Length: 190
Image (cartoon, rainbow, N blue to C red):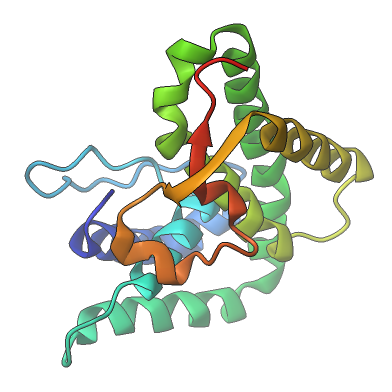
Protein backbone atom coordinates (compact mmCIF):
# COMPACT_ATOMS: atom_id res chain seq x y z
CA UNK A 1 0.00 0.00 0.00
CA UNK A 2 1.14 3.53 -0.66
CA UNK A 3 2.61 5.58 2.15
CA UNK A 4 1.11 8.77 3.58
CA UNK A 5 3.74 10.73 1.64
CA UNK A 6 2.65 9.07 -1.60
CA UNK A 7 -1.03 9.88 -1.03
CA UNK A 8 -0.30 13.42 0.18
CA UNK A 9 1.86 14.14 -2.90
CA UNK A 10 -0.88 12.78 -5.16
CA UNK A 11 -3.49 14.99 -3.48
CA UNK A 12 -1.28 18.08 -3.66
CA UNK A 13 -0.46 17.52 -7.34
CA UNK A 14 -4.12 16.81 -8.04
CA UNK A 15 -5.20 19.97 -6.27
CA UNK A 16 -2.77 22.01 -8.36
CA UNK A 17 -4.40 20.69 -11.55
CA UNK A 18 -7.94 20.29 -10.25
CA UNK A 19 -9.63 23.31 -11.81
CA UNK A 20 -8.35 22.50 -15.31
CA UNK A 21 -9.11 18.81 -14.79
CA UNK A 22 -12.68 19.42 -13.61
CA UNK A 23 -13.39 21.74 -16.52
CA UNK A 24 -12.05 19.26 -19.06
CA UNK A 25 -13.90 16.33 -20.62
CA UNK A 26 -11.09 13.97 -19.58
CA UNK A 27 -11.64 11.34 -16.91
CA UNK A 28 -7.92 10.74 -16.40
CA UNK A 29 -5.37 13.56 -16.34
CA UNK A 30 -1.55 13.41 -16.30
CA UNK A 31 -0.36 14.03 -12.75
CA UNK A 32 3.21 14.99 -13.66
CA UNK A 33 5.05 13.96 -10.48
CA UNK A 34 7.54 11.27 -9.58
CA UNK A 35 6.62 8.67 -6.98
CA UNK A 36 8.77 8.44 -3.84
CA UNK A 37 11.61 5.95 -4.06
CA UNK A 38 10.50 2.30 -3.87
CA UNK A 39 6.82 3.18 -4.55
CA UNK A 40 4.79 2.43 -7.66
CA UNK A 41 4.39 5.12 -10.29
CA UNK A 42 1.48 7.45 -9.72
CA UNK A 43 -1.74 6.74 -11.56
CA UNK A 44 -3.20 9.52 -13.62
CA UNK A 45 -5.30 12.05 -11.79
CA UNK A 46 -8.93 11.03 -11.40
CA UNK A 47 -11.69 11.93 -8.99
CA UNK A 48 -11.77 8.34 -7.72
CA UNK A 49 -8.01 8.46 -7.20
CA UNK A 50 -8.30 11.68 -5.20
CA UNK A 51 -11.08 10.24 -3.04
CA UNK A 52 -9.13 7.04 -2.38
CA UNK A 53 -5.97 8.96 -1.47
CA UNK A 54 -8.07 11.17 0.81
CA UNK A 55 -9.53 8.18 2.65
CA UNK A 56 -6.16 6.47 3.05
CA UNK A 57 -4.72 9.69 4.49
CA UNK A 58 -7.66 10.05 6.87
CA UNK A 59 -7.18 6.47 8.04
CA UNK A 60 -3.61 7.09 9.17
CA UNK A 61 -2.86 8.45 12.62
CA UNK A 62 -1.04 11.68 11.94
CA UNK A 63 1.72 12.62 14.32
CA UNK A 64 1.10 15.94 16.01
CA UNK A 65 2.10 18.77 13.74
CA UNK A 66 1.33 16.86 10.51
CA UNK A 67 0.03 20.01 8.92
CA UNK A 68 0.77 19.09 5.29
CA UNK A 69 -1.66 16.17 5.22
CA UNK A 70 -4.36 18.10 7.07
CA UNK A 71 -3.93 21.02 4.67
CA UNK A 72 -4.27 18.73 1.63
CA UNK A 73 -7.46 17.20 3.04
CA UNK A 74 -8.94 20.62 3.80
CA UNK A 75 -8.00 21.94 0.35
CA UNK A 76 -9.76 19.03 -1.33
CA UNK A 77 -12.95 19.71 0.64
CA UNK A 78 -12.77 23.38 -0.34
CA UNK A 79 -12.25 22.48 -4.01
CA UNK A 80 -15.32 20.25 -3.96
CA UNK A 81 -17.35 23.14 -2.56
CA UNK A 82 -15.94 25.60 -5.09
CA UNK A 83 -16.83 23.53 -8.19
CA UNK A 84 -19.80 21.32 -7.21
CA UNK A 85 -21.33 21.00 -10.69
CA UNK A 86 -18.04 20.12 -12.40
CA UNK A 87 -17.22 17.72 -9.52
CA UNK A 88 -20.54 15.92 -9.91
CA UNK A 89 -20.23 15.76 -13.70
CA UNK A 90 -16.75 14.23 -13.36
CA UNK A 91 -18.05 11.67 -10.84
CA UNK A 92 -20.95 10.75 -13.16
CA UNK A 93 -18.48 10.22 -16.01
CA UNK A 94 -15.95 8.23 -13.99
CA UNK A 95 -18.35 5.92 -12.16
CA UNK A 96 -19.30 3.75 -15.19
CA UNK A 97 -15.65 3.50 -16.27
CA UNK A 98 -14.61 2.26 -12.82
CA UNK A 99 -17.61 -0.07 -12.78
CA UNK A 100 -16.51 -1.62 -16.08
CA UNK A 101 -12.95 -2.12 -14.80
CA UNK A 102 -14.31 -3.84 -11.69
CA UNK A 103 -16.62 -6.01 -13.80
CA UNK A 104 -13.72 -6.92 -16.09
CA UNK A 105 -11.57 -8.02 -13.16
CA UNK A 106 -14.33 -10.24 -11.78
CA UNK A 107 -14.87 -11.73 -15.24
CA UNK A 108 -11.14 -12.45 -15.52
CA UNK A 109 -11.32 -14.10 -12.11
CA UNK A 110 -14.29 -16.19 -13.24
CA UNK A 111 -12.23 -17.45 -16.19
CA UNK A 112 -9.00 -18.02 -14.24
CA UNK A 113 -9.44 -17.95 -10.45
CA UNK A 114 -5.92 -19.06 -9.58
CA UNK A 115 -4.39 -16.52 -11.93
CA UNK A 116 -6.40 -13.55 -10.65
CA UNK A 117 -6.88 -14.10 -6.92
CA UNK A 118 -3.45 -12.64 -6.15
CA UNK A 119 -4.49 -9.32 -7.70
CA UNK A 120 -7.42 -8.90 -5.37
CA UNK A 121 -5.84 -6.48 -2.87
CA UNK A 122 -5.04 -4.08 -5.70
CA UNK A 123 -8.31 -4.56 -7.58
CA UNK A 124 -10.38 -4.09 -4.43
CA UNK A 125 -9.29 -0.46 -4.62
CA UNK A 126 -11.58 -0.15 -7.65
CA UNK A 127 -14.53 -1.31 -5.57
CA UNK A 128 -13.60 1.19 -2.86
CA UNK A 129 -13.47 3.95 -5.49
CA UNK A 130 -16.96 2.99 -6.63
CA UNK A 131 -18.16 3.28 -3.03
CA UNK A 132 -16.52 6.70 -2.69
CA UNK A 133 -17.72 8.00 -6.06
CA UNK A 134 -21.35 6.96 -5.60
CA UNK A 135 -22.35 9.74 -3.17
CA UNK A 136 -20.65 12.25 -5.48
CA UNK A 137 -22.91 11.28 -8.40
CA UNK A 138 -26.42 12.26 -9.25
CA UNK A 139 -29.04 10.64 -11.44
CA UNK A 140 -26.97 7.63 -12.44
CA UNK A 141 -28.85 5.23 -14.71
CA UNK A 142 -30.41 2.46 -12.59
CA UNK A 143 -28.58 -0.11 -14.74
CA UNK A 144 -25.27 0.97 -13.15
CA UNK A 145 -26.55 0.38 -9.64
CA UNK A 146 -28.09 -2.93 -10.68
CA UNK A 147 -24.77 -4.04 -12.19
CA UNK A 148 -22.89 -3.03 -9.04
CA UNK A 149 -25.36 -4.98 -6.92
CA UNK A 150 -25.03 -8.00 -9.19
CA UNK A 151 -21.22 -7.82 -9.04
CA UNK A 152 -21.36 -7.58 -5.25
CA UNK A 153 -23.55 -10.68 -5.20
CA UNK A 154 -21.04 -12.57 -7.30
CA UNK A 155 -18.17 -11.28 -5.16
CA UNK A 156 -19.92 -12.49 -2.00
CA UNK A 157 -20.19 -15.97 -3.54
CA UNK A 158 -16.42 -16.22 -4.17
CA UNK A 159 -15.24 -14.32 -1.11
CA UNK A 160 -13.48 -15.84 1.89
CA UNK A 161 -13.84 -13.64 4.96
CA UNK A 162 -10.63 -13.01 6.84
CA UNK A 163 -8.05 -10.39 7.71
CA UNK A 164 -8.02 -6.84 6.38
CA UNK A 165 -6.68 -6.96 2.82
CA UNK A 166 -4.57 -3.81 2.97
CA UNK A 167 -2.06 -2.53 5.53
CA UNK A 168 -3.41 -2.87 9.06
CA UNK A 169 -2.83 0.86 9.70
CA UNK A 170 -5.63 1.64 7.22
CA UNK A 171 -8.26 -0.65 8.75
CA UNK A 172 -9.74 2.00 11.03
CA UNK A 173 -10.57 4.16 8.00
CA UNK A 174 -12.23 1.30 6.15
CA UNK A 175 -14.55 -0.43 8.64
CA UNK A 176 -16.00 -3.83 7.82
CA UNK A 177 -19.38 -2.22 7.33
CA UNK A 178 -19.58 -0.97 4.56
CA UNK A 179 -16.16 -2.18 3.28
CA UNK A 180 -16.82 -5.90 3.84
CA UNK A 181 -14.93 -6.76 0.63
CA UNK A 182 -11.67 -5.50 2.20
CA UNK A 183 -11.83 -8.15 4.92
CA UNK A 184 -10.78 -11.34 3.22
CA UNK A 185 -9.71 -12.69 -0.13
CA UNK A 186 -11.02 -14.55 -3.15
CA UNK A 187 -11.26 -18.31 -3.33
CA UNK A 188 -8.45 -19.86 -5.33
CA UNK A 189 -11.07 -22.13 -6.89
CA UNK A 190 -14.75 -21.14 -7.07
